[in-house]
Amino acid sequence: MKNQRIVITGGAGFIGSHLTSTLVEMGNDVVVVDILLRGNKIPKEVQSKIEFHQVDVCDFDAMAKICKGADLIFHFAAILGVDIVADNPIETMETEVNGMQSVARAASTNGISKLIYASTSGVYGHIALEQSVSEEILIDPRTSYAMAKRYNEIYLASLFEEKGVHSVALRFFNIYGLRQDNRMVIPRFIEQALAGDPLTVYGTGEQTRDFTYIDDAIKATIHLAKSAKGFEIYNIANEKEATILDLAQIIIDVTSSASEIKLINAPSKRYDYEVGRRYGSSEKLDKKVGYKPTTELDNGLRIILTDN
Ligand SMILES: NC(=O)c1ccc[n+]([C@@H]2O[C@H](COP(=O)([O-])OP(=O)(O)OC[C@H]3O[C@@H](n4cnc5c(N)ncnc54)[C@H](O)[C@@H]3O)[C@@H](O)[C@H]2O)c1
Image (cartoon, rainbow, N blue to C red; front, side, top):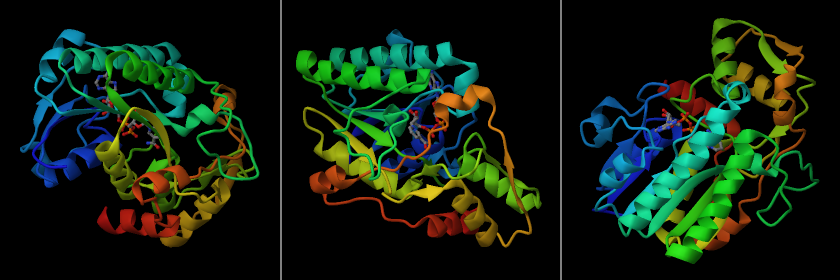
């Protein structure tokens, strides 16, 4: 992927900023659309190499102008973070649904044939399986965030059928890495460990997640963007199940912290988000592009701590 004009919504956020840097490095003209809810995470040296618009993705007139002449759109703008989403379900859904309609219309009116969308492993909901989840299993989205993501996946399938816009929905499984902020568990635990404070774990800590390192997620995203045809859904997962207790202990070990682990009750508003087990299969991704995430959790955490 080179010499393309690429629009990235949410491009100043955690994942978007890494994607922006990589696509600039590959020799593309990158256009970022972001309202900077968490500041601008794009490295300073990259900021001067991109076109930036502080514009709400739901503003169709603005998006139609910005997207003129683009070859490809990555739609990553969203409201996220369990506590933020639980407190703002309407804003979360409106950003997802109105944002997608605006981006999709901006693509089809400008003749842009590819759209890559950040969905979520949250669409699997409370499904607890003895093996990793594949894209084919029945899903169970429960939260405003997951429901809206699932709605958008179906919207994209229809966008291909009716308007011929090719797209991929990426079901990200707990992406982590440099520049992530403490809405998410890993930066929160690292902060607590470095301060020598107890690492606060909700419930028993036996709940599992699949932590996927950012560089792996970006590689997978770019492979899929290159090969997108029709509409398809892919898990972006490391295929490893780690309990939150394991995670806390690994973070204590890699930071050589004297912190303890403290179990606390999860606030009731988090109920729908407190999934017992979740880890993904990246088999479909591997079959399609010959690549899947492999960075071990402790290695990914060491990279964050060294580069910080
Ligand atoms: N981080 C993860 O583990 C994870 C997991 C599953 C899915 N995702 C999805 O990946 C995408 C990126 O996530 P992230 O972790 O980088 O989040 P992030 O919050 O760091 O980035 C999202 C960006 O979107 C911007 N934004 C929000 N509303 C906007 C609007 N109306 N108009 C323009 N910009 C807007 C924010 O300012 C922010 O910079 C999101 O769609 C998210 O739902 C992330």
